[in-house]
Length: 389
Image (cartoon, rainbow, N blue to C red; front, side):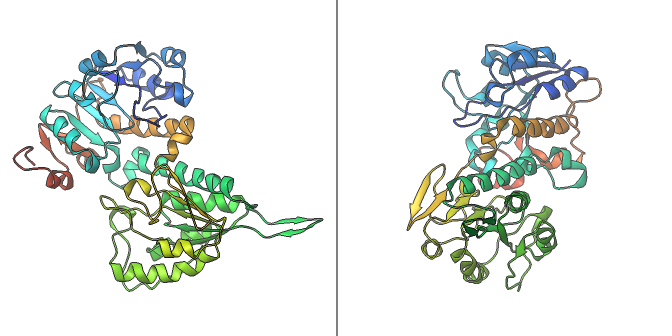
């Protein structure tokens, strides 16, 4: 019987948990022995008693649980945290499986540790964008929450109403919201802003998303499409500076009239494209708000700062780096289901750890296995003599 461990997340600001009583019950029914660190779900409103009632064993010593676990489920990458004797990844035994958001580009030392320890690690951000993998798509489930929360955050900081209001004292015009990037977060932001009554305009380098934007009630900002912005797996691809310059010229006119701007544009494995320059911010009206959801990868706005509020020329610029953690209950519900779906490809029907390396989803998600770094882009960033690729 394989042992599964769910630790408490120790990264500052992280409130989510990698399993819920719902998924614990499913794992126990599958024949897995599940251990949950005490307090792991408290920040996301899941009590220890609920986990225990679902069949989990509560543990107070996380170091011992890391060492004995066959599978560890996490939200954020392992790291050095106060109260632990060393790096979390160092506690994993050879052959153990780690599943979570691992951010390999920003955690190369962790990748080295996992490979050196012969740990099989599957990064949820590497799950292929194929139909069969949709239940495992944690990037999408968490981006949807971020897009929703970003509009609420903008509305909270705006000095005016979002919807059109007709009152005895006169009419209040609806707020104008510009959403930059029509991926999962952007589409949820469009839908939320429309439900709240705003006029929504949308900019995206992929002409193919125009129909989706319009189906949600947004107005698509037409861009000069000399080259396709469609990347692999439905993501946008990195565009040349000439295209980005022309895009900024067109979008600037819309930003100047906007009350709120939500930026969501990301390119996998690359710094976020710079879509809103300081000059564009200065052209916006005082009191308007920018919410930059790409701040963790450098930001779409030149002036945004991670987890900070910047006021420039009267424009409020917010850079929340982990908005899903602001809605930990539902974020954990969705994330835990994503993790559990991927776990099914790692554990067989008898409850034994047996990842199928021939499965396209497992192969695409593998970061390390058998003492090697299997994700090519990450391996290229490491010294070849340190970790064989």
